[in-house]
Length: 407
Image (cartoon, rainbow, N blue to C red; front, top):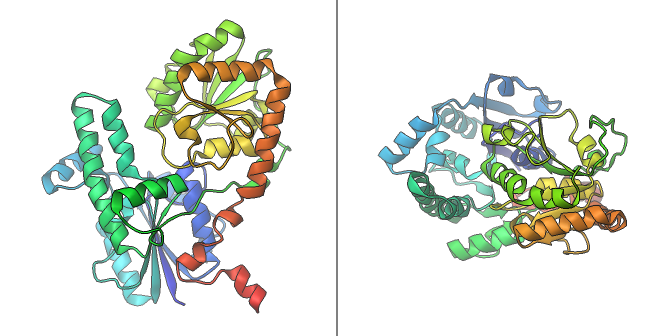
C-alpha cells in the first residue's frame, strides 16, 4: 500500500482540546500503518512552531497560519455563495502542497479531519477518501439559528443550509464518512440518504494511562465547601452558553442548600462573557491550568450543562475516567454508551440539574458509587485502541497489530 495524506483544520498536536485530541489519535494510528503527509492550519505562529516527539516520523508536513479575518471570510462567502466555514479555511498554499504530494508520492488514501478541509480534495483524485466529520456541523448551526434571533439567526440558518448541501456532496464522494457517535451517524444517514456502509461511527477514546493516574499534585486551593466543576475550551460558544446558564439558573438553587458551594469554570481562553461570571453565585473562573486532573480530582461533582451539543463530550469521558460523579444535560450525554442512574445522571431540565447536583452533594456515598461505576465503564470500553481498531481497514490498510499477529 502507498502513502496517506492527512488534512486537518488545526495542528493535531498537542492534544489539548476536544477536536485536537481526536485528530491527534487518528493521526498516530495512521502513522503506524503507512507514511503520512500532513497539511493543517495553525491559529498563530506559536502553534505553528509547537514541537511534537513524532513529528520527525512524518513523510512531510505543511502548516499554514490561518489569519483571515472573520469579516473578510463572511464577505467572500456571500460573494461566492459558499459557507463561511469554507471561506475561512481557503488556502492556496495548502492547495499547492496537496497537488505536489499527490503528484510525487503514491498517495492511496486522503484522510480528512473536519468538513472545512474537504475543499482540498482534488477533483481528479481517484484514490480512497475517508472523511471524518466527527459531528454534523450543519445541524449545529441550525440549532444556533433556532436559539438565536436577528441577523445572527439569519447567518446561522444560511450556514446550516449551505453546509448541509456541502456535507452531502462530500459524503457521496468519500468511501467512508465517520462520525463520533452512532447518534450522529444515524442523523447524517437520515439527512443524506446514504447507507450504513458509507456512514459509520468511530467513537472517541480516553488516554487511560493519563486519566487513570492518581499521582497528581493538586493546584486547587483548599476550601471547606463542595466543589462543582465544568471543564472545556472557554471561548467555544456552547461552553460559554452552558456556564452562563448554570451560573444564573442553577447555582442560586444549589447555594440555597449549600451556601459555601463553589462552581469552578476551568479551561483556556475564557471569553469576556465567561470572565464576567467570576465571583458571582459562587463561581470562580481559572483560565488555563497546568493539569486539569488536579481539578477533576478535587471536584465533588462534575457538570456538563450544555444546551447545544453534538457528538461525544470529552469532558464527560475524562471525569468519568477519573471516577467522578457526572451530571449531564440530555444533549451532553448523547453518544456516550452509559446508563443514566448507573454511570452518570442525566438532567432533563435546568431545575433537575440543581436537584441532581444537590442530591449528590448531600449523599457522598451515592456520589462515590456513581463515580466508581463510571470509571469501570470507561476503562473497559473507551480506550483509543478499542475505539480506533477499525480505522486502518476503513482507510485500506491492514491493522499493524493484526499484521504482526498473522506473521
